[in-house]
Amino acid sequence: MNWGKVLFMHELPVTGEILKTVLKHAKWNKVSKVVSVCLQIGKLSDLEDEWIQHYFDYLSKGTVAEGAKLKIERLPIVIQCQSCRLPHNVEASQLAEWTCFGCGGKQGELISGRQYYIKDMEVQSCERFD
Image (cartoon, rainbow, N blue to C red; front, side, top):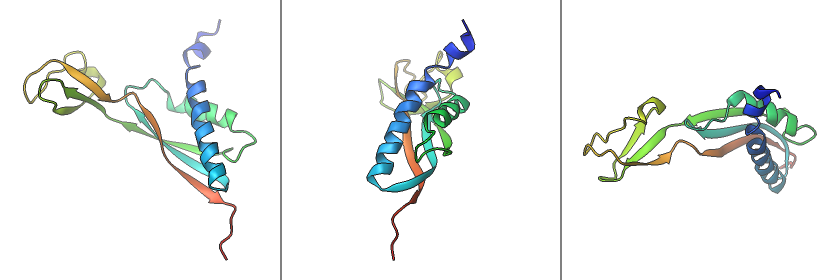
């Protein structure tokens, strides 16, 4: 078994859903070409930028999104203290020993860091406005 391919296969279904959403919005808006797609992905997500682009290139062949470049922005990891409700931006390396700097609490809830969103798309429209 080729473990390298197994480790990165989870990007395929996620990228498929991203493409499905892009194509749906392109159709609704009579888009002739999707030039780029801006994605926001949480820093805790294990989605790899290069694999998402690789799968997007593969899956989008023959569609209006073929050749589109993915612009990926990483969103911060945010934990909200369960005691005082103060949100904290943290790095992944700080998660195991996190302490609220507001009240000293040690219980927090992850409110950002694993998500992914389509922020926007750059497109060309097939409609002419004369």
